[in-house]
Length: 323
Length: 259
Image (cartoon, rainbow over all chains, first blue to last red; front, side, top):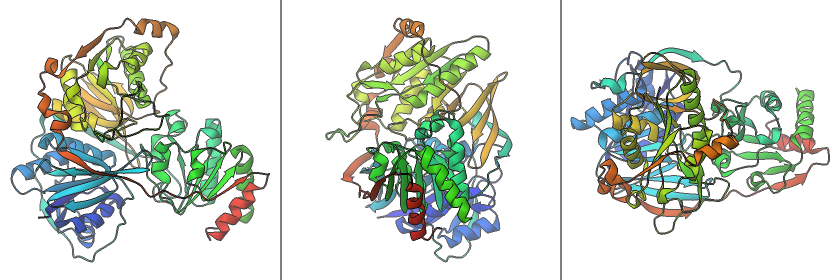
């Protein structure tokens, strides 16, 4: 019983495994007898060492994808291994741009469901049980796989704490990518890095986020200024992302990033369930909103009933005076 | 340039959602509206068809009870027609079943491009567009910031963790459109009136040649074993700003030793 073999879809950022990947590895090694990492690309010595230190026995690497997208190629490779009898009983991928593609393509290849938005996992017999929060995290739904096929789960970021387990370097194994035909015809022709100062939104210890209460797009500069003065990152509610004020990459919430900073400062955000899912794991929450009935106050350690346009400029001056 | 846009009709997100205690799925028995996430795909399709100097924009949706009110919104924006799949056997369908059904409905036409949102606002699995592509054996690009139509291909700026990738993809293909990248038009009065007489082709699983046993509850491969209240976070202090709230925030931050 139990899960004999589990593969974690590994994403490599600047030559290292992403935090999302090591978070999943921390959980994976409590779920399965053998844990591997599968990556779309070449496995460097550094990645093999890191994967091993986080509990993986093997890194299955496809080799260079020649511009091919991760989703279609990695899924085809995993499905090929499963078909050949050398694949895993379960696959975890992160709820990321590429992780979702991998899980989705794999589910069709295996005709198996994906349990999505998982924040916790346990083993029941030989099946995984995933916990998914719904309605802004007020209710948890636990879902168990029943199909007897490979079990695929998409894990929300920040659900587990990455921690090394002290293993030696993982073995590197070549993983063949079967011909993907027309489905694999999309190619990356160029990659652009957007310049950003300060820490990343999902790694920052301080996050200031703005919502519709800011009134207009120019006022988002206030949010950025507070974030910068605190050495943190600026985020946004879905409302102002949908309105085109800030890019999707700044969105905190159910459809967006999960953040768990030491301090989360919500500026003019009402606290729709969509938003709460992404930030209520923060250690401390401060909220400023004109509407004293705003749901955001239900999760705030310090709630200020007031106008962001009057409180925030004074806060900025006070922070500057201390700098 | 023929574009099919997948749209979902969902319970109004402003209402508190609930689970059907019997089926343990989202209760979708109330009036449904167009998922706002889908308005970006509809807008993108209309813009691409206009830029290409013609072509059709049609819709594909799956919903219980032959619900069309959300479809009418998208038709009022300018889409020409819709295919609506409605069948009792679809209750409890997961993302994979949904993708199989939508793929079959899309397959009835021969689109150059299939657009969808990156994820729905209610179920938010975020897997359906890529699953549709896989079922249809088509290439796909998810999380598009922009789409440019070329000769037999599309060029897409695809969102990444650190910026974006330029991706070239031959058509036909599936592209998911990120919310906020275009400004959805408001339906005009004329558009709303015209939408009432635009064709909505209502089809069943049998019409699509799909075995009812392969989708819905029967096709799930998963079961809900438990539903529980999550641990609630407790609200703290709430103060009304008297002009000095910033000082209260500063002292709060000092107490946490982050200042």
